Image (cartoon, helix red, strand yellow):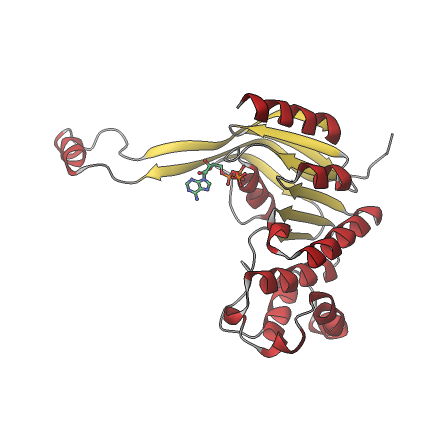
Length: 250
Ligand SMILES: Nc1ncnc2c1ncn2[C@@H]1O[C@H](COP(=O)(O)OP(=O)(O)OP(=O)(O)O)[C@@H](O)[C@H]1O
């Protein structure tokens, strides 16, 4: 049994709800006004319902579940992109999130400027970025396009640069959401090799993917979400087996 370090991610009783509809039909709005604005016109949807989990430093965790089960929402809460409506989310150490391709990029800036901008956001000094710049560009294979504004990049080029910056910032916790699907096969292989290298170095990985074979090779632990609740948490092959069974029944 592997022993892990201190807690890297802690979620306690996490709740996140979204407003599905702000307004209803004119008739409904009129009735609402006539009745003295009683009640709520918007419809709320609970995307995460009382989610508690703890990930220790060095653990590799696959977050699994069918479409809409709340995986991306949980990742966004852990990365700090979203705030919970209830409960608490805590992380320890530098967290790098590859959550939405190019989300941290400024579209009117060149790839080069975005490397500096993103590096700074992820906590690197200018000197550290200077030292790593060549290596970041080399890994990304962006080549001469590094001085092109990123709004002209393809989604694969965005991913390459974002992934390369993120791994070079040497994060403690690495959050990855499905985005590997954007890259072409050779780059995917390179990313997967890099992710495995990070895992071997003892980094904490939290990965969302529908590629169950892939996550089984990268992660040791699986957490299964269903309708915003954790319904299973254990050895990845067992959790993948459970999800496959449920997918057949669905
Ligand atoms: N900003 C939002 N506003 C309203 N509803 C949202 C918002 N973001 C997510 N949702 C809803 O919350 C639920 C969970 O979404 P989430 O993206 O976390 O699921 P997921 O498990 O990552 O799904 P998938 O496998 O399809 O990527 C979905 O029903 C989705 O429609």
